[in-house]
Length: 471
Image 1: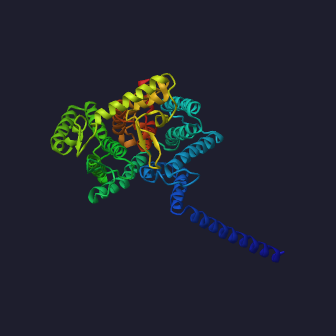
Image 2: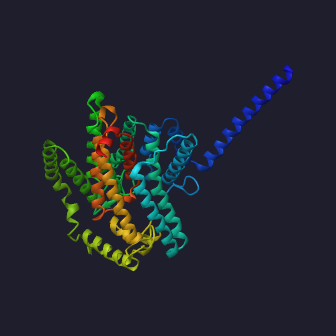
Image 3: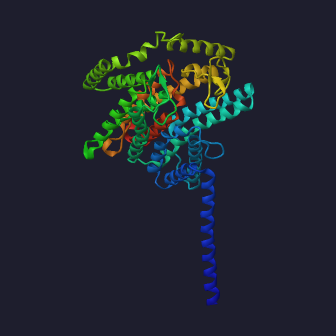
């Protein structure tokens, strides 16, 4: 019997050894097939494990990692998905697993209040637009439409993960991780600024793009980080240099924002700062106004050429181009004509690529319609009046809820984030208003990740006593 026992133990150990050898060999084969993408895949797996084992840290690092993934938009990691898309799908799957486990354990599921309800309305409207696009343009529209819908669904999944896994007082770790995520894009931006190693330029002036594909989304992201820092600064004390670190991050982001030469981003930055000052004390109003005037005087000679392009036709040798404002108005007029052809339901999600007469060439060399550069025009063309009604509903609900939750925050010493709530409130409002003039911030997934993660933190930081008083 002893011999059989020891023999069995040896056999089990042999199997375990062979199992480890097989697992190592399998990993080696996968690494050989994926090449450098294997590191990205392993990183994603580690993030998923952290979300389960240490939710605040895992979710914070997940949001932080998203700011660098646009650099790999043309890289296929798994099943034709690039790292950004793979992360979005992983977030949806993680949310499904977490909610299922909570339901089976009999634990209460937090559904996130009106934020979830409002964004669900937008997902329903977008899903209907996918169907419209499929009927109008067939299989290609289905693929792109579903990909866009999944992207929009991933930010709601992130929000649900935060409200279900991050307890009161631990949301601050997510805020710090969001700032940590800004390090890589800003370091790359500094490198581009110092070396001039940037492909994008306007009339010979090079514009930094960080880890993004274009200066405009990088500029909006830097604006988001700067305003985020302004609010986060109020929720901290001077202990251990925390405020100093946040201030340094804000200055770095604001400085790099200038060298994106993104007019829309600068407009969002100034609009958010002015709105933020109006909601504060007289001292804040005066300080913000003085800061804006000083910046305007200091930077006007440096940036005047960029805004002059709005109404002056540049003369490039024998070629005269349309000025930026004329081009945009012409683009809007053409898209408006397409909207009138299907004003109720639109042409389908992502249909701007097919219907816009203003053409461009994609990175793959295909011809496609130019972007709308206007959120309202894009929604009207792709989703019609039904979609626009849904979008207005989302904006109004988000503004009301964020403002209310900001008033309901517990004290900063207890883990509340009233300052951060005010910053997100003014930033979301400014982006929503200016999106009707010359930008489409719904396309900026990184910014949406910051928004939804922060709103999730606000949800967890509400005081029950204040909620009862206000209701």
